[in-house]
Image 1: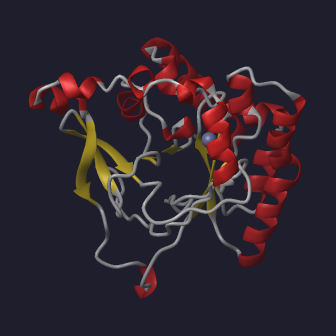
Image 2: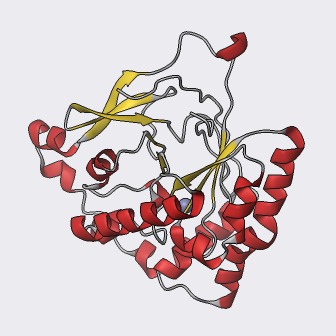
Length: 265
Ligand SMILES: [Zn+2]
């Protein structure tokens, strides 16, 4: 088993707060949402027996990894992380309208510098999960992230590819290896943390994350505490630092904060 001196207990996360009324109107106006529910969601699970349902649950929580105490006798440990998606997800799905891309560009121009200034002000370490394409388009970002020496950079896909939609084991492996190789070259060491784009695993992701040798994943949400991930009931050696457990807030879609490890772990 790998290092277990974990620390993660903040439940801060940023997410959008849409105007629900406007959203509801848009959804009702959209043909996809006005179709009969059965056409949109066929609910295949209703046809399966218990064994078949259990066979579908392949990634689960193993042993709890909450330490007996936090360093310095602290009552709670807080960690911040940010997903530096920028334009990557939009480019991945071909959504290239200038307005959409400019929203992603905001992260590189003003969003990230603002966050780094705030973290620097209070000398808070954080983790930044970044798609390789985000770095290729705005290489200054990782240079700025690493400038203080306090922060960690983790893998967040090649181009924020949506893995369940990709659903291709070989192609997913190619993109993961490409992303790891790129970040390794840029930050000067192999990244130890992984967060799936959109937190979304394909059937192959957990196996590939374990095989790639990541110390931890931060895409799942099975516990308040860190835990070891099981794949098909077997320990993977990968620590999960759950992303969701308490509450979420967000000023923009470009940056998101979640529980994540101290960069030096
Ligand atoms: Zn993301």
